Image 1 (spheres, helix red, strand yellow):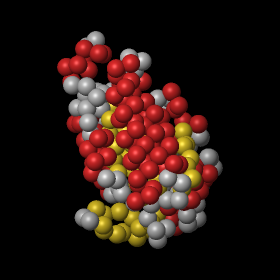
Image 2 (cartoon, rainbow, N blue to C red):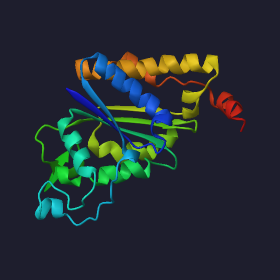
Image 3 (tube, rainbow, N blue to C red):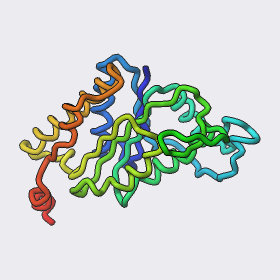
Image 4 (cartoon, one colour):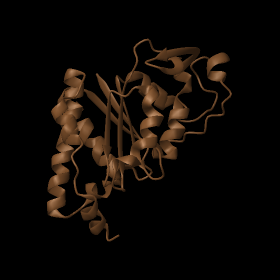
Length: 223
């Protein structure tokens, strides 16, 4: 079992997104999985040209010569794929979106329908399990609405969304205590997903717990 996070935060290890992804991977590793944390900012990934040569001229291989070939191999080797991203404006970062666009060589030009979603058929007969990890510095679950809609066709097995995301890097002892408890639930989710192929309702409920009320958070931000 291999679990790979493709992290679309431009801040890399300095980001709140890193804290979430690292906790998830820690749980997966405890469960015995091989883990890898890929920071997309560290790779040269050109933009998809929409030429579809990877379908019709060089099947499974992109014509662009960059570091995406290495990342595609990591993707192919993995059983659980985690897309991690902060929300800056409405949706995933440009880094992650560009990476996802470049996953086209993993598809074949054959339309298929799954649970009402139309998509292209995967080359791999064993579909990857998709996990979404995201945080937003704004309060409210509505900040993740566009991302949820964007990833729906991938049928993620688990989605972890953390609003009031600035709290994840707080140095306040009281806040830090709550954050650590929440990150322990993220870790438990990674462990359960590897061991059981699902996450318990108890852990899912814990992941949805607020870290602060909205008025408290606005005061914390000084806004």
